[in-house]
Image 1 (cartoon, rainbow, N blue to C red):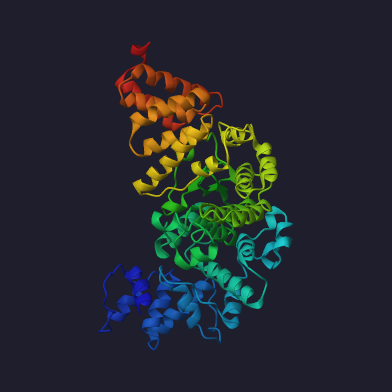
Image 2 (cartoon, rainbow, N blue to C red):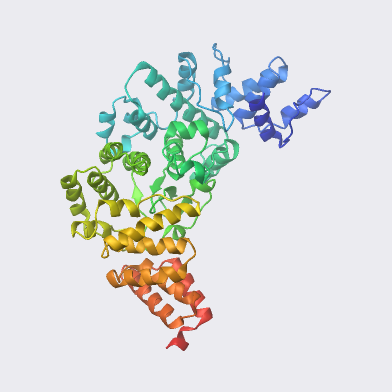
Length: 515
């Protein structure tokens, strides 16, 4: 009953705990208040009033919507309740139930016109065969589900088909809301309304996802909980877009992912921020001091990124064997990826596989990826003997929203700075730990020490300029700002952070006075 009421409350905006009561014309009024394009609301109405003429009419209307308004002559001769319950699950419900063969075949027949069906990857049950497919033939949902299967069995295939049916039903409900020959912008708007409005997919609280990011990345878990981090919801969005013939790109700023549509005629970009209910964010917002342009990922690479997210959880649990296994799985989809080589190299070293770790780090040492400003210094310092395994683990140790976790990491980094005084990243992370604690005075000498070792780091020059601005040392603030601007300008990059800092400094001490 709670599930049914939830759907009807969405329909009528009547957020109360009372069941609608049939008195006079009230049932007719309730029926006419339903969204005529909402399958879920009509299923919910039918569940409340299954024996009434309006209830049966509501069921037929919902089925017509799933059929694309093709007016099927009769309802299928199966028990529709599992499908109805599947559509109208509560946002916080537990794992979706597996569907029986009659219901699965019915949904698969309903969905046979979806645009992912002609893809070769949709009909394949062998992950190795999927790996060999051309990029344009990959079905993302099938590839991800197969990659998460522990073994190929009848039960595992039933689970995969049930989750695919879940996505198919979502796509069919979105199609029911679209006009004939919809534009990409109309598709994006309706997907957002359905996924974030009606289905109420949300970004999980930090206290949950920080410990179990893999749970909020894996597609089945995201579908079950309707909670997902950026990668989890972006993957769902891409799976829907394949079914709806909506061309999207996956974009990965450092530590993040979102999807976007690029108009093939005008090249106009529509960014879709899946952690903020699909709102459009300017591309500039994703560009940091070290990020000069946005990195585009293929669907094959997105599969690899899912394994990388799972690996990060094992890494923070210091289960390096499991971490290595997951990164090695990711390599099958992320060919010679800079970040993957770096992280896998570190974990080889953590696990005592020094030769293999060094071989990977040598591949990236000194390289500057096209989308970045600077090379990774950790790899260089390790290969030069300036740091060790424990020091690298210290800079990557996880913190949460608690001050105590920052203090704990700060203590580790102080030990690292004493033991490895030329380890550039160790010194920088110690300075950042002080900044996170609001201790700019203590951060300042560490930043100055770091800048002496690594003068071409735009972020460190930015931090120094900002701190000197706060301390009214305008000459030094301008000096470090000029350095930061020169470094990024040499790569034709002009980040907003430096523009904002310049404006703040100009208001406090115009540049002409300094000169």
